[in-house]
Image 1: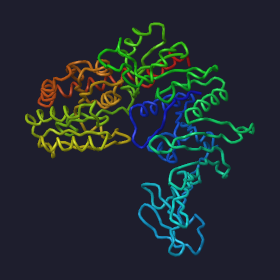
Image 2 (image 1 turned 180 degrees about the horizontal axis):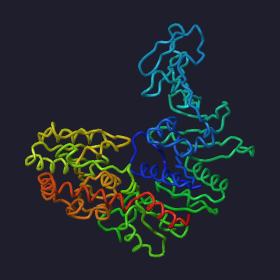
Image 3 (image 1 turned 135 degrees about the vertical axis):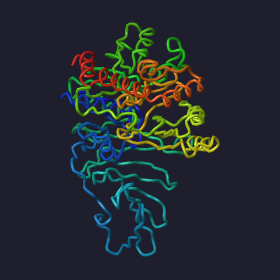
Image 4 (image 1 turned 45 degrees about the horizontal axis):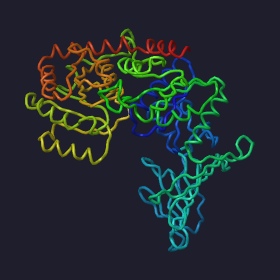
Length: 504
């Protein structure tokens, strides 16, 4: 079994999670059993993964594993009516939760899962003085998953995690950190495999034990860590026969412009200090592989594309011509954050808009709300309100990509932007700053996009204007992007690379 080690799968994910989801589908398509491992306790996990086309069998969560809830196949819709509340209680129904009274006294609140009509998510209990004393937490699949208990100061002190039959499987105790917030102090795995209790200091120790147990159970497990901060230390502690790989999802150097000599990212450093402990390191680009090999020539380091496509011969691979898309439309996909230099993108777009009056820019992605607000204020300042749209995060951009003509990227650095590859899959030329890593691996300058030196926003604007003013060139660039994606990154070719490197 192949396990892709992650922290979580959320309703809004980065390219790290999207890459893992693409990979698990690829492996299982070729009948090579694979799962995404997630670490955090998440009662909505089995709802969330469905939004990304991932099945329950393709994800293994640590808490599901120890609670024995991995095989809960059918979700039960549980509402307040199913809670068996005493007949004398009065229920006052609200939009997000119901308040439950015994006479004039508030006894509990029953909260609902966001986006559902009355589907139970939690029950908060109050004592005679109105103090919050406990909360039952309900899984999306319709069973009580855990109970939280609170002290007189309202702080969380202990949490019990249950099997579906109500048996306590884990108990987590909390102390206070320096700011008075709850901090995990001890976790007890209750009577594990009928061998008695097992004790841990924190969730990290439990996670290391979890990976060790999987390796022991499978015998020939292969772990590929997608989030180094989550998986490097547990795999360093793993001394069994399992195979261990690190996927490098970020720029490995603290100083992006000095990849050979600069200090390593703090999460990656322990892995490369003990590179012989791992079977290999995987990057998304050849450029990063070369830089890492220059630093660690004896390590096994290789590059594999993060996305896959259908070959040109497949009928499903249908390209949308440029004249069928929104005319003079730009798209950006990624985090809305300072390191992505969104302010530069907006100012660059203002230059395009001055020459191409009907030009538009649409930005898909999530970020800090304050930063997004500041960028929206900049849009107003530049008088671009009618031409710029912030569309937030969209789980599946397949249909969206086909509406746009050119992608832009002005990031400072990256680990190989998944969005550039996805743009090519949909025949979108990309105009991007040169940075480590991605643009020079994906973009053939002046053929399927343009590579622009950092800081040269005027040059980028001119290249985009040139494409928008020359329909034939724009169509040719689109065709070149499409052909590259559907010949170089086909599902079979990428799978062959995995087979070769992992010796599948």
